[in-house]
Amino acid sequence: MRPAATRRRVEAARLLREAERRTAPVEPLTTRWPALDLADAYAVQQDNISHRLATGSTVIGHKVGLTSASMRNLLGVHEPDFGHLLDDMVHRDGGAVRAARYCAPRVEPEICFRLARPLHGPGVTLSDVLAATDAVAPALEIVDSRIRDWRITLADTVADNASSAGLVCGSWTPMAYAPDLAAVNVDLLVDGSRVATGSSNEVMGHPAAAVAWLANALTAYGKGLDPGHVILPGAITTAPFIAAGQKAEARFGALGSVSVSFI
Image (cartoon, rainbow, N blue to C red; front, top):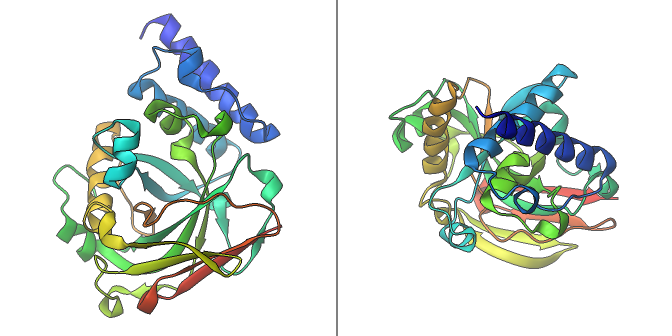
């Protein structure tokens, strides 16, 4: 790798760490470094994940983003992206989180998968994912952008851990009792008022298809999905902003509900 590319990656990772630590977003990385590409972005993400692991965090799974056609069209890309989920990103269902710890948080309702068996690509299929899944749960992903005003390109959000910031899971349902995961309708409420609705089939036709994509994508990085990992496959609705004093709740019909308050 050219020295300039190495310096670019190191500096971009440092800027994002500082932005998160200070809750002070930075200008888009791609504005400062127009040559920053997807390979750079994933390297920046991994650098910051390695930094957090070195300070005591643990990887508990991954999130998939850009799984809806509308979001991919918005950014002009043809495939999803992924980020890491860490143990210190998890919050209790019905609990409260401090809004001030985030730059500009939003919430996304998703069906969370919990694996009982490993998934290592290439060639992982939707059926493989369903067979390897132990249980599913209603979830809210807290997404945040350390990029000012969410002015992100694909490379910007990938570098920024795919804009992931938090996870709230509801009760787990064993797969034997789970509803059809391609036909789960979701209502997203803020302070009791419905702000968005959607169906799980908007996530690549079936949320498990997004998990399969992830398992195969990780192959290029020498990684896979391990037993016990949790996977967020992508948002079922739009992602409204959330602020201190507000409560977000997602209702997934037979799969249950999940909520979190911001203080």
